[in-house]
Length: 344
Image 1 (cartoon, rainbow, N blue to C red):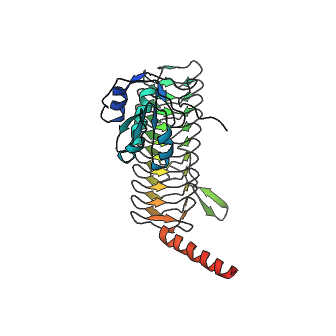
Image 2 (spheres, rainbow, N blue to C red):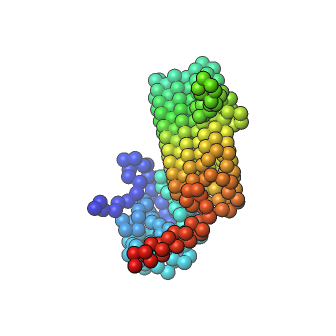
Image 3 (cartoon, one colour):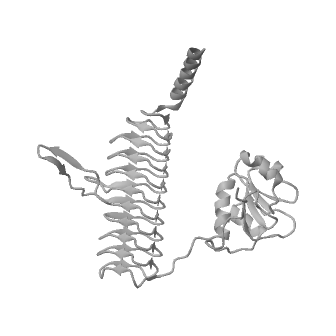
């Protein structure tokens, strides 16, 4: 079994350390502990950390490891502070995982953009590329495209005709965008396909008749689109991904879909055409949505569910067809009892 190691391998991640305890506490959003001044050189898991490392105890499941850690300081919630061993500084806050994200950025900041256009990139004469943007090797920027300030376009990515990128976007290697308008700080991971024609057709006596897809894809601010995810453009209205939403790898979003703000959709989910998902919805992996269904705000949908009808706000559903989780689990418990009785 591999031994635990520090995080942030220097082969791949530049480290800005060492940082003092005051800088770490400031990044974490907590009070600076009293006592001797300390310097930390990096981050590590509880089991791998040494006296020069910052670590994290994110949940009560980490209590046993926390008690044995050799870390110099650890981020903890108030109810776990008593388990921090002697000699380890407790950095206490309500949400240690969110604080860890900020401390990680202190030590390993996001890679900076290197402005310029690689000599192997192909940029149309009438494309507008901000001078602070970075265009990678063999990237293609087609006619009329607009690349905003501090954007990075990865190797081999294709930004189609007329596509607009707001400031600070990141487009991963081999991703392709067409018929799309992106807001600020949108991250598109490698291999994603955005803006292609949707699965639109009708059946005639002569066979299938393709229906023109005349809408766009609108991706609002602070959205992340996972690797190899596909988002079809709209047919008669735009496909919209709301601000702050996170799409996992290998998600399929069909034409005319509207997804609200701050939704999280896990891998291998398929969303059929004209589905509407309101704000703060969480979707597990491998979920399927029938077309035209409406999902209310703050709904939770379990993995491998089949959503075939509208869901009220605040619903918690599992199964296929998706039904209230309590109902499904009660049915499962009843079947188990019946099965045990039959064996007896």
